[in-house]
Length: 235
Image (tube, rainbow, N blue to C red; front, top):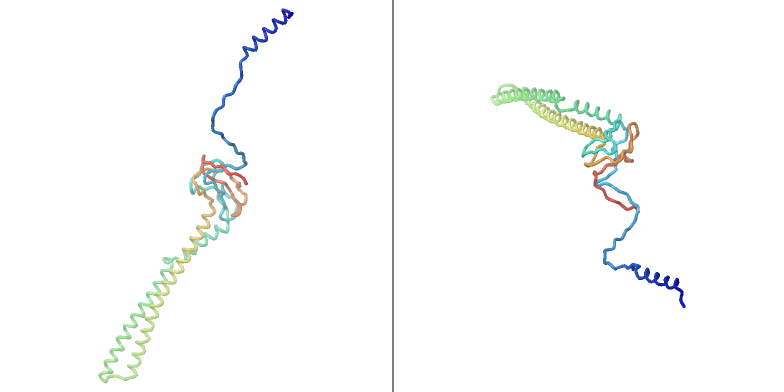
């Protein structure tokens, strides 16, 4: 015969077993997201390494990291004595060789041409006058030949003076143009001493400080668009 205590235990067990909640899982249809992990670098749009066009010492730093820049904004100024002197010499040479500075040579050639023209006119008049006399059997043949020779010499001198004037103008123009081209090159080289931004954006990194040496082989800064980034995977 089952004892009263055992019977009570069975009833309690059955009660709690029946009241215990069943844990169940219902299937659902969802999109699966696959995650791929890789190492890489974050770069801004239009990011590029800034290089100096000429070697020298950093003279001035116009920006700090994080500053906004626009196209043409100066970043560094390089001190290069040789380039600066060359630009000044080219400027002096251009001024000295300019067409306007050498107009006295043109005026001299024009004066010589004017003198040769007057001599030609005079010798021409004397020659034809003597020829008319000779046609009338007046005068000697020697006088006629002398007038003719003087007339021909005057023609040659006039032609030579014309050529000289033309040559002086051409040479002056050539020298002036060449010296001006050299000056333009000198200015361009001097402008290269200012390192400028090629984009509208932000300075992300400065690799040099004032007093340090810059060279065209190593980047001096990193510049790119502001707040526009892309991710590149390292290989």
